Image (cartoon, rainbow, N blue to C red; front, top):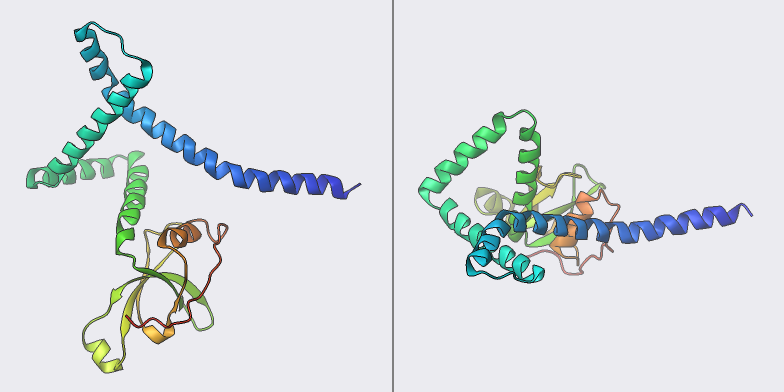
Length: 213
């Protein structure tokens, strides 16, 4: 009799862990879209009022989302200009001076930047770090160049070893290719593994060939 409540509780937690990430993801996407649509929906509403018609709700929301996407694209183009960069630095400095906004803004900015830098991550590897027989997960960012390579006489590689659960900080180590174990997982799976503290763990399949290029 005592096993039944334990089995029910474990099954419930297993189901919750399966469904909760999906629910949270959908909620974040829905909330984000709703906020973005809210910025431009008044303009779309005024446009249809000027035309003297009432559009279906889905059409108004789709046009609002499209208008928001266009506005964000134009904002991105402006932000890449010299004047836009100066305005962006001034806005960032202002946000950093606000006590409550500073930690939230800086954390979100670092998190988004980490996903942007994901393009620079080429492969997921295991490296002995911070000591021997202790393996850390890292992202290979490229082959190392310079005197260290010539001194060692073998290929050396730059590896970024992120911290958990915040992958925006970490350590950069230069390691011989023969000392790296390349994993047969995607960069996205590696980042999820780090951010979850190992709770969401893909099968760490090690490729047979050593890292050489």
